[in-house]
Length: 106
Ligand SMILES: [Zn+2]
Image (cartoon, rainbow, N blue to C red; front, side, top):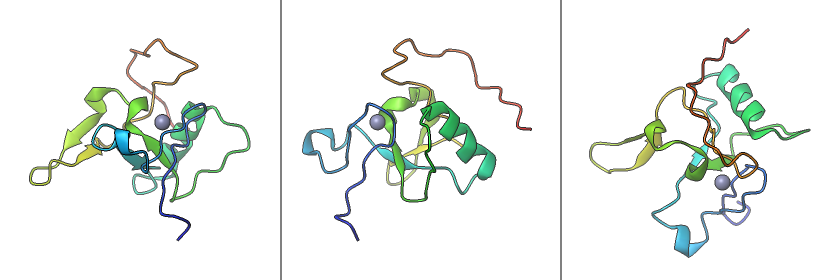
């Protein structure tokens, strides 16, 4: 285990889960491998990173998702992403993209 720290994969973002002041404010979400390959690809496109291969260990922090992308678990209150959510908020793109993602996969 390399340190156990998670670092946000978004370009220009240096949030990690070992920064104490982020605790409870920023959550980290792994790439949606469980949803399927096409979602992983869509995230990859969103991140606009060249030569970048997402792995199961990579995470994107909650700052890149609209509040409406989150749902909260009943008992734990843990924040998790709604199925099909994509990161849309990036530093290089401060205006929030309002349009609903209507990707046609394939
Ligand atoms: Zn981030």
